[in-house]
Image (tube, rainbow, N blue to C red):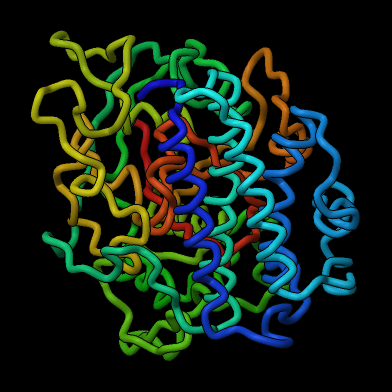
Length: 438
């Protein structure tokens, strides 16, 4: 993938992101555009204005030094200075105003493209603001789930069926070696917390070939795992006690007859789908119950894109994707992973065999985000990029997730992408796979 984008690519990226963002307004008007004040969501009306402001701020204002297109936009939409709880109390402009603001920003962003191919610096900026909007698209998707609103199927192939079903049991055994954890400087785009690839010693380990399923997690619930202090860390047990949780979020019913609230509908719990909407504490407790552990982000990345040598050691180089992209008949992402909302939600863990890693791990990309054991910390030599608030304020108090989920955009996520959330968040599209020392 080239670092430099042409004008047609930039236009398509911006328009695709805005179309998907706008789709999340479906069925909303009046007070529903703002919604209840919750710690885990934003007012949708505010959030749409924010993604537009972000584009103006980082390209037109911070890079070009242009004057503000809307005088009040900084006071409304600058997330670094507008506290989360204050966003419901702001004099938020009406939707027509926001749409007009978005059209003006789009026009200015395209007008500044004075050559057919953008520079590397400008290409980075256009990817940054688009990927930022892609992240918020995912936030809109889980916000509608949180609020019990109808699902928006906003992919041209959304809701299509998938080949392959059932469980995918067993472990992949990963050999020892040295691995370059992180992003390479020759990547088309890199977020600051991925910089840079650095050598890490890898001890042999075993990792599940698929994420933990609903059926597997149901055994933990049926064994009264949420009431057994032995499976929980001190912080995890404090969360259980304060939350009163007895099963994953959105599970309804009882052992043997579980249902699941998916947006505004109840459906039977699918036993071979990956468990989803579990937080880091729940994932860790299940691992203790199963005699396993969460993989570190190093182990996760090795299992995803590492390869063995003929001698059974770990190669020093790694793949660009879990599936092999080196051959003439390379696998396309839509055949290898559940991304881009193409299937309308999670699918069985045995699906997408074309996306298997060199070690036989399935669905390392897409379907559900996967919690790792690792704290979100900077790599050696970290310095923030232009979006200084992206990573640096969150180091130390969040956990790393890897791999993307069913609605994550394939143009944004890579095997070195590091997502990060507090360990008590269970509203995001997150699951996990387990690990063991070899």
